[in-house]
Structures are given as C-alpha cells and as structure tokens.
Image (cartoon, rainbow, N blue to C red):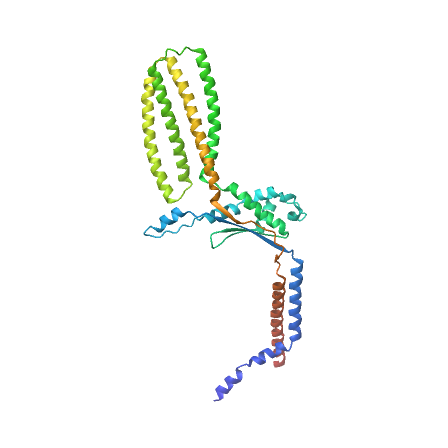
Length: 370
C-alpha cells in the first residue's frame, strides 16, 4: 500500500505542469502577436506574384496502345506524348527563344533594372516557369511573375514557339527533300549545259537504235534505283527515330523488299553498262550524258512530287497536340499568402513562447528545490 501511494504521489498532475507556463500568459500573448506581425510584415515586403496558365493536350497513339493490350504479357511503356512535349517546354532552346522573342533582356519588368547576361536571364526565367504533366494527359505551362500581363505573355510565347521545335516524320522529310531539290536543280542545269556543248562539238546522228534502247533502259533503271534509295533512307530514318511497334514491323519488311529489289536493279545496270562499253566512244559519251540528264529530270520530278505530298501531310499533322487554353492575365495574386504567413508567424511565436515559459518554469522549480 505504501509503495502504491508513493508511486501515486510521484505522478505529476498536468495542471501542475501547465500552471507555470500559463502564469506567463502575457509573454505567450506578446510572442504570438510579435510572430504574427513579423509574418504580416514579411508578406507585405515580398513582391506580389501573379500566375498565368496555358494548357495543351498531346494526341495519343492508339495503334501501339491497342497492339500492346492484345499481348499475353502486359507491357508498360514509359514514353508518352506528354513526356515529349514536357521535355521540349523545359528545354533551354525554347526558353532562349522566348527570351529573344519577347526581348526580355531589355524589359525592365523582367530585369528589375539589373544588367543580365543570357545565362542569368535563363536561370531567372526557368525559376518563373513550371511545366506540369496533369493526370488527364494534358501539359500545363504555369508562369509566375510580378506582372500578370508579362506572365501571360511568357506562357503564350512558349506555346507559340513549341510548334517550331516539334519534329514530325513529314517535317523531317520536307527539310531533307527541299535540300535535295536544290542540289538536283543545280546538277540538272550543269548537265544540260554539258550536253549542249557535246552536241555542238559532235555529230551523233549515226548512233544506232540499240544504243538508244540501252540508254533508255539504263535511265529507267537509274530512276527506279533513285526512288528505292530515297525510300530506304526515309525508312532508315524512321527506324532510328523509333516509332510505334506496328510501324517498325512494316518498315523493316519494306526495307528488306527494297534492298532485294535494289540488288536486282544494280545487277541489270551492270549488264547494260557492259553492252554500252562495246559501243563507239562518241556513242558511249553521248549515252552517259543523256542518261545523266534524264536521270536528273526524273529525280527532280520525283522529289517535287514527294515534296508537295509531304507539305500536305505536314499541314495535316498540326493536330499532334491541341491547345486547350491560352494564358490570360489574372490580377488575383497567388503569393505571398498574407493570411497564411501571418498565422504561421503567430504559431511560431506561440511555440517559441511556450518553450521559453517552460524553460523558465523549470529554472524556477530548480531554484526553489535548492
């Protein structure tokens, strides 16, 4: 019984613990008020931030999704259209183009009167921009800045510049074919001038019909070989850029067929060239020049046709992503949160005062015991 009473006497009453702290309620109230005022002052001194948001929705690839769903073993693909556009929006290339497009290095609302080089301006812009992948698959460009109108301009400029960075299959083809067209047009002019000089210097009326037939067939074979080479290069480019599984399989099968066809064309050309080498020297030179002119003409025609088709396809590929919302200036500030900061400052002051009162109470208790 005596042990139990001793233990009971050792158990401290919560009221006894709180009483010394509550006795210093004036200190607690003062610290709480001071903390709240500090939080309020800090909020008032911080610059006001405004937020603007633009949203796009990347088109989903249904072919690969349906194909993967039919496999006996589920396969998860980490590569998503949203991830591709997010990477582009976060890239230094797009941010630098935004800086130059809006001339932000000369804008006092962006520089705040400082002299910024490109790297410092890029870091400042990157801190203001947040690219978010949403659960519904959309991608948002969120810009926070001290001026709501500049924030919306930055978001919309990034949105407008995004299309210039997106590399579709037809866009790569258009660039490639456009360059080949320029080269072919130059080579064709040179070949026609060379052919004209040859005809003026030589009498080629005696060339036999057999040589003409060989030349004609060689020209046709050259055209077929060129078309096969162009298509093989396009297929190789698509295989390197890793499309969906269905396209990869189709491209690989098509590539094998083209390579086999190309071998037959090369073999037939070798046979005809051997026959042509037996003709007189003038006829051989005429055949070579005529084949070159006809080949370049065919090349120019094929490339022009493909260029027009890819340009049409490129216009249709504008739907790789859809703009859901363009950014609008919003004059409702998002930071600093004055009420929250004031409450947080008061809470910190309250906790600090409580800890301080507790320490003072403990000191007093030890002093009485001594």
